[in-house]
Length: 388
Image (cartoon, rainbow, N blue to C red):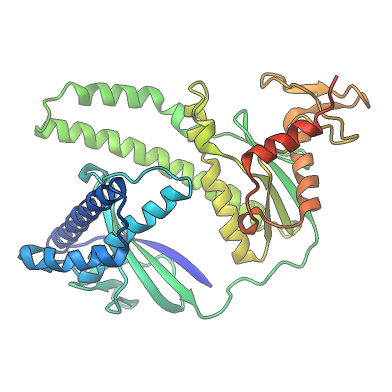
């Protein structure tokens, strides 16, 4: 089983300068490879990752300072371009150039990687004995090490480890629960529990506007401008940390519940949902996609099953008692009464119960299933709605 551990680094000035140089060169190589790949794509030519790596040899011969960076880290940066284009061909966004102000990272897939647990140091190719805070210990083989720098100047190391044995035994219960994700409440469970939305971004929005206004008034490129931009980056980092902390706590609690064996959630197309300009900021603030990803990989650790149901399933419009489906249900309607059985439903609790029933009916997770064409899903959904 593969598992990633993230640690904080406190490099010396010389080590920090070498890390920054490696990040900068890898960013340059990525942008050059992206430019070449984009030109080839627009001209109907196909360039693989191996073709781009062959060009990397000529680049290293032309510029001597590129040799100061580990060659396998440069190859990993080139391969990221190939992966970005594959994601684009599968429906993702077009690859973008990397910018310096966003920090950056580079990967160390070579064999020269070592953690000294007694001295609390990390050794990677070209850089030795970097001070590291080893908050968690692991036993296994290190596959890759990714060194990253945030926009606020903090350094981290993400260590991907192949564990020698499974750390957590599979669950033995046979209970299931459905989760409906929303905005009024972050999550509503099929047992009626409602988890409040922390609204990390909304609470800090006024402060963000003040800091951004101050930064916009500074002279570009000046020391005061860099300080003002750093204050904005620190606040955004704080918001991201608050959101990640909340998502980790909720996902760990749900997965670690001994009374739950299966979790059913609804597949969400967040990229399409944020096109609604009235709800886009609130949708981005909650972090639904990251939460579902956390449920899935933590479920593998604990031996739990996470099932994604079809995103076109009318969970809110369907009566969880008799199965009657409404023709329309406005987002502002939080409670409704079924015209068939006269049952009164809380919109979110009813949706969570329907998600649970649909998940148990399907019994398999959607990531490994073939995706049904969108037109067919729409047709099937419309046929399930009673006419007249």
